[in-house]
Image 1 (cartoon, rainbow, N blue to C red):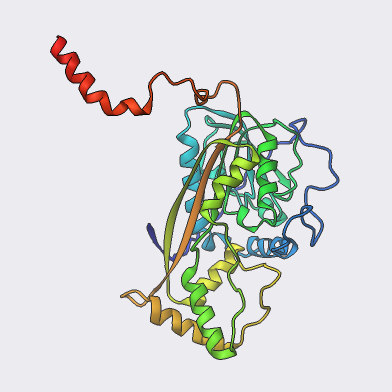
Image 2: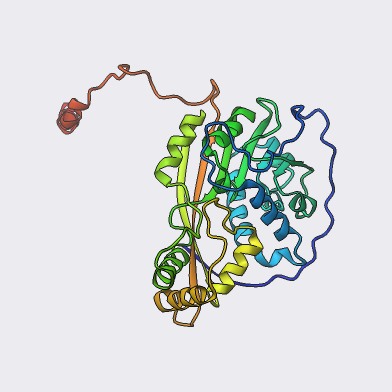
Length: 345
């Protein structure tokens, strides 16, 4: 677990060059962004995607958005590390739900030739971070990627897919736009993320109002993630988890930072208003149950990292069933065979 402390940054973003995206596999569509309130066919409509777009646009419009980007920058750098672990270069890459470009800023042009950055928030795309890689920004929804099949050598995604209504469809779209032997590397919140905040709000609301509503969005379980990747067509899967703990002065500072990240709850069944006394009680519960020795309170973010490859004939494959030349039943005799071999020498 990596402990972090809430901190403030104060640097100005330099301008970034853009390149035109001509004839690079963009499908002809009227819009890559789904209409307000829409969802994939047969998908559970859990999140208000139009509200999420507004939240991310609001966060990107703030005078100093970099004050709240410490977590996304940290996870973006870890995704970049996983890209560098693969001993190859990627002429054309796609960042799904890029935000302000937290992955691209940690990569170099020797590894990635050109980056397509996709997000539903136009203000985030207008204020992307500086990178030496030529970039093309595309306004599109993660569930409705406007690209042709077999377009990209690499697809990455950092802290975006936990807000899609139809995660299986989103993964299928990513698999669709990857070239054969292309790789997808992603990260998303999951599991026990913000369990301290969830528990504090539930206890306070139950005590003050006689019941509680969901104030933290639901997350995917790690056990389901490998299955979803396999169902989408990926193979040679890797799924691992990590925890990042950030210390805050109090619960209200945590909630302020979540809003500044564009990570406020957008579930349809959320409660629109919490009473003042309930919020104060939740802050007191948070301090009482979880405070550190220095008076700060921790917030735990559980991150799921995933890697999946699109099939290609050149990839290593398991041997055919029944092709083994040695039975598992004979493994117990191996010591005897070794000792007999030594005697014969």
